[in-house]
Amino acid sequence: MTLDIVESLPAVLVPTVRTERLVLRGWTADDIPAYTRMATNPRMSRYTGSPSSEAAVWQMFALQIGHWALNGFGMWLAHDRVTGAFIGRVGLYREYGWPGLETAWTIRPQRWGEGLATEGGAAAIEYAFGTLRADRTISIIHPENAASIRVAVKLGMRFAEATERNGQPRHIYAISRSEWRPRGAEPR
Ligand SMILES: CC(C)(COP(=O)(O)OP(=O)(O)OC[C@H]1O[C@@H](n2cnc3c(N)ncnc32)[C@H](O)[C@@H]1OP(=O)(O)O)[C@@H](O)C(=O)NCCC(=O)NCCS
Image 1: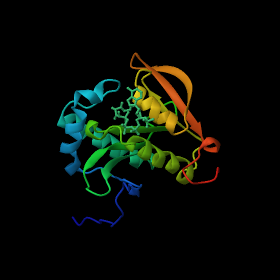
Image 2 (image 1 turned 30 degrees about the horizontal axis):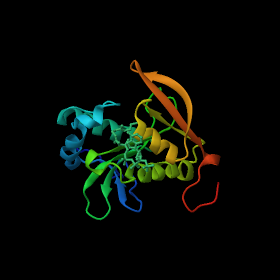
Image 3 (image 1 turned 90 degrees about the vertical axis):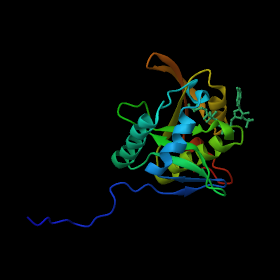
């Protein structure tokens, strides 16, 4: 039998976004070991779930790629723009049943405190409002995760409501497009 194979673009096109210090790009199998080193650091799972093995990270990568395919947006891996070193993950997330379009950030502990979550989060919010033309984005944060709450507040988000996830408390922070003030730009 002769297969009629039609050439096509890859099903998942993840745009690369550059910020001042970060390159935000898509997910490859080569990134799994570095991601696993970050994810299995106990500091990562204090307030949120984190994959506990390379196998679990593989599944999470497949989920993130599938998320881009289904939604047309998603999370990026973040790398250092100068050195290429792995830094973390930032972007947009909305799985089935999610309470809104989430902007999320995770930075490997060795790079905490450099403003990188805020920088990546700003790029994700700008993508949500400027590229996707979303009306609102939220962040879902454990109420004791002071660093993450600080990132949300620095980005101009405000407390919206208390909720829970898997029996754990969560606070939703939110910002609307009219409230967003990207650095150096006029309000939309
Ligand atoms: C939350 C997280 C992404 C922050 O990353 P980061 O790159 O260090 O964040 P930034 O440097 O942009 O900003 C952190 C802010 O929190 C502040 N902060 C840090 N620890 C804090 C604490 N315990 N209490 C209060 N503020 C704190 C920092 O001083 C900084 O604020 P400032 O710029 O006003 O000084 C990072 O800690 C992380 O990945 N944690 C594990 C995963 C996680 O919790 N992700 C968020 C899920 S909602």
